[in-house]
Image 1: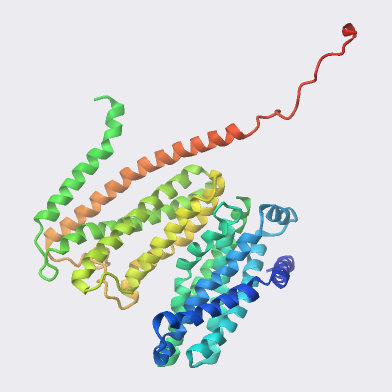
Image 2 (image 1 turned 45 degrees about the vertical axis):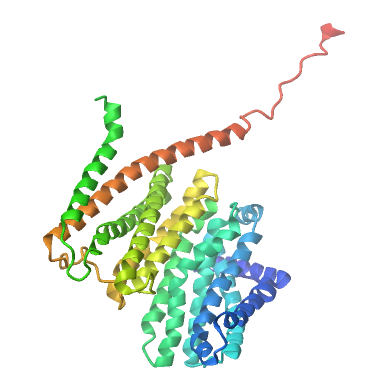
Length: 222
Length: 247
């Protein structure tokens, strides 16, 4: 990664984070929405505290995956064709733009995961075990979802269905991440090996990154 | 018989013959000692699942072909194959559910093979939905090609899920390194005939779908060009008048 590429990535991350500071989509919409979902779920399945403690981690990851997609949905609905044209005329490397968008999305998703995670621990009385591994899982999931979401947002940008299509594209592809994240917690709880699940998540993350970077230019040309 | 009629009727003849053979073998093959008559569902379920793999692999090839050559003919191959693949994946899932209820006692279970097949189905439903969002043929082709490549990562996952994870779904019966696991030759032949018949159906449907995509693209391009101003339309011819002789 050369200095030019790095500075372009940094510029895109800075732009996205500044936009989030101005609009507050994640802080004021996605995080409260995720917390509300965790609050509502027990009302539908019963308030057996032992059952909730058992299924709480799984519920948390489902909420992270489904509502975390909103970060990318917001991005797809904000960027107009004119903005994209202006950015490409400035000579921004499409791969750098993809990496920058994914990194900023991953950062925002990590904040979302931490806040909603605290809500899940409080509401479902979840036991926090294997702290360093859980942190690593949170980071890998945030990066993986950020990469997938940014790729989906690039695919639907300036199309008629636009942001409505992003969840349909991201949700099935994020299943390995969901499986990996839930099984890491189960493995830590039961004292099993978590390495295969970590490996699965890392492979998904890398494959998405390679496809995203490799197709950034063809996608910009469309 | 004129050559045009002959070329139009070959797909139907091929389908008719292969389906007739497959159906005959499916009827005359014996009932399974464990599954009983339910085994006959497998004569459609297994070929449908095979066709899903084949179709999505062709979508991968078509998507890659488009990104490399930028020829829309590759995109038509990818799109046609994905449409057929989605249909046959749905068929495989539906028939599997009908088989599972009397065998496992449930319509659905979160088995690795079943879950990943459903995920693959939704990925390609998303692929088809993505194609509907762009009017321009090249924009549509470029975007869907990316998803066509990414989605193909699920094909080996689905196939090897029964090997990599402990699943309720039985392991592969035909595509095994040590040969088919079916002992009764008639059951094996019935399955193979089903696979051949479905492959013939796939080829015939592909030919028709590619033709339809070609026509649809031509109509779309014509409609778009009709709305577009022709070259030089913005230039108005100089108005003559006010010459010397008019005064």
